[in-house]
Image (cartoon, rainbow, N blue to C red; front, side, top):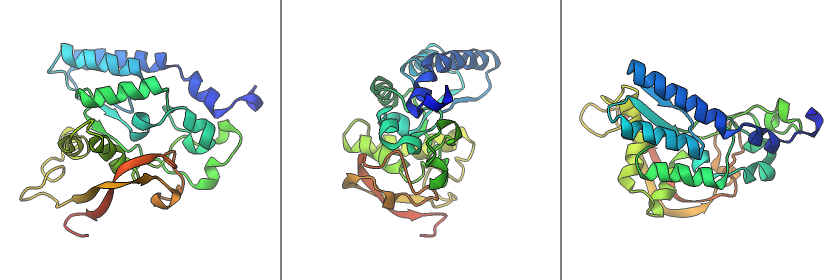
Length: 233
């Protein structure tokens, strides 16, 4: 009965079993073909266990694991609080899944954090009918403070922040010759941050067309204070 289905119902309906099965299949294909493979938007405790075991069991396996900021910080509670503005695929999960993601971040199972930037205009996310709300949320506005927050709390190091957001993705996607590092010949991309700036994310922090974010009201430590792109401020 579509009339009685909520966004939270939809999130719960996407059983973590489907992610576990998908990751297991992908790992087997990667193991057989030795083709570079990225597990995108890994979001469940079971998914991280399968990925971790695969990488430990075959250290040369060309398998990389991505996680998004929202699957590191946010739970299904956000759907009750923000309705369509917290609707994404994969959905935000349980607190246990978040903790599993953080553990995978700490032990190196996760190779990089991706923004999954998928902004939709505010009016598109206002519908009361979950079947007509597009999945996807902005991620560029909050990805840096979301990762810096873990360094500020000494869960990971600031070197880990550079690795997760710069070095590792540049290497994986074949652009390390000009991105992900500061050396002669690189593009001169620099992000200066203040790790001591703390506070809750507000609508004013969301500069993309979405105007809203599932991180609204979520407290993070660390902010971007200056961005340099190819040497230009």
